Image (cartoon, rainbow, N blue to C red; front, side, top):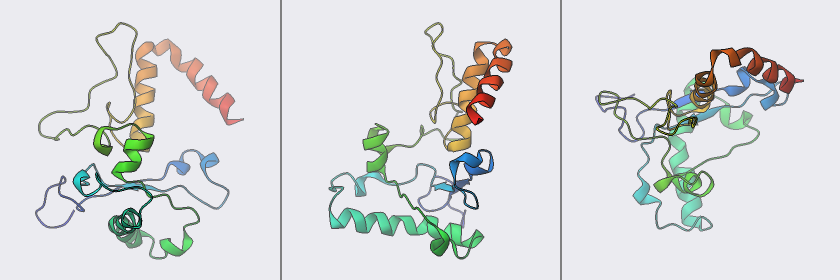
Length: 170
């Protein structure tokens, strides 16, 4: 974060995860998957009237990704030349592929006012997982929410879950 701006200020915070550290099948040998994003601080109004196929959209997508590239370059100076596949998502991407209202990325919960909900619901036997549940947004957090939901069924289910995970690795 820079200056005295809060975490909810645009271009003031980025979150980075490297899911291939935990699952090497996500990338070819010698490569990794990096997932970097801002914590739901992108102003939707700049995107809402753009056509995804227009030159204006492509230019804005490139312009808005520069903050994330600059953050990555502080850690990996030559990341732009080393990246083999780059996929930049926008609020319109989230709206289209994730069916998220106004391209949101997780719920807008202020840290000092609440926390992400747990997997339980008022409907018996229905549990939730994903970026709108505890522990929140990002690949590791979403995976964690899946584990929480699975383990909420019964702690007796953990050995069966581990066995299934091991079988999927093979």
